[in-house]
Length: 191
Image (cartoon, rainbow, N blue to C red; front, side, top):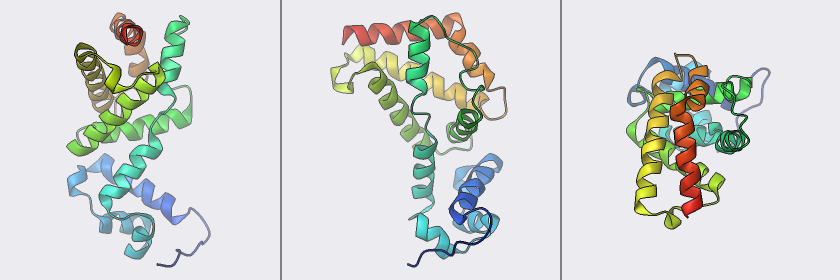
């Protein structure tokens, strides 16, 4: 397949990605179509298939490209230094934009398989931040980590898109957030 023409204005791939997020904000993923994305992005189907194999492929690529890879390390470093700030998400416009996108996948419009992949990716990021592998964890620590990450993603999905994203920072700064981070620190020390 030949490369799409590069014209003036916003590149086709970027328009398709924006169309994906706009549609996901409006309707559940299961109701989205390639035709709707193509129409909204003003591209043809061939252009879509130049960049993506399917709608699911697009969703996975967009999930991966919007992951806040350094956020667990920033949270953990700030916590251990006693400098945890409530504005971890809202202080940087790019982080806020990506946070809101991830919240769409974690929220009611995201598909269950997307939430499962998101949970796997976030778990992996936290384990990497802690210098651990899942195989090193005791069963009780796996259960605690699953509980923590599932709750975190549920909160992000529920409040991240339409609510106040600063709520994420306030929860992390709360007694609950400090308890979660202390638990994660203990898991790291036990393994």
